[in-house]
Amino acid sequence: MAGLSVSVNSGLPNCEDSSSHLVRRTRFLTLYDVWCESVLRWIRALGGPEADREDIAQEVFLVASRRLHAFDGSNPAAWLYRITQRQVRDFRRRTWIKRIFTREHTDAVDTLPDDGFGPARTLERKQNQRVVQALLSKMNADRRAAFVLFEIDGLSGEEIAKIQGVPVNTVWKRLHVARKEFLALVARYERGYDPTAPLAGRRGNAPRM
Image 1: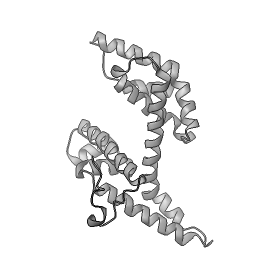
Image 2: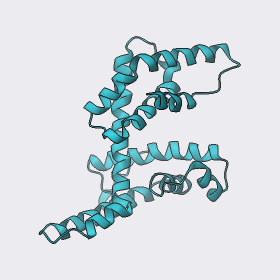
Image 3: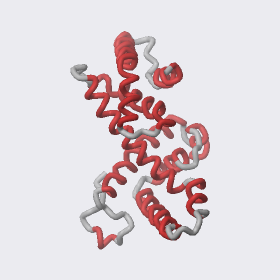
């Protein structure tokens, strides 16, 4: 767990000069020490992939560190469990878009043996690609570009900053908003919203962002 601890701590604000921030940091580290193993167990129980559990746990505690000021401390288990549920759900949705667009997935589908299911799987992949492209088209252009470059192409924040000609902090802000925007669109799609339908056919069903 040492590696995870370093990663989580590095996401905390620089608090050395503020006693209130030092108190918050101490409170967070105590929360982390007490609940880290539980969070990892919850991620496993919620179906988080074994290889990604520490990454998901890091996101859980980064969210917790940002929201700690609003937490009353009355039920840390329930509070952290709700955050964990959302992070596992969001991880699955991000994995979905990666699986649709990565070369490995495309090659694996296109080279399947002719077992009677190959064409159906290829059609499903193409349909999923159209859905994702339609969802992405609803997003702000700069945020969408940062999201695709980071989540699908695997570029670093620094590389995206150079491409987009903005400070790296702007990239992280764009990614933060883009993830929320995209996941909200995916959630609406899962509830029946069809982003590929003609405009007249989905009147009144446009997502409210």
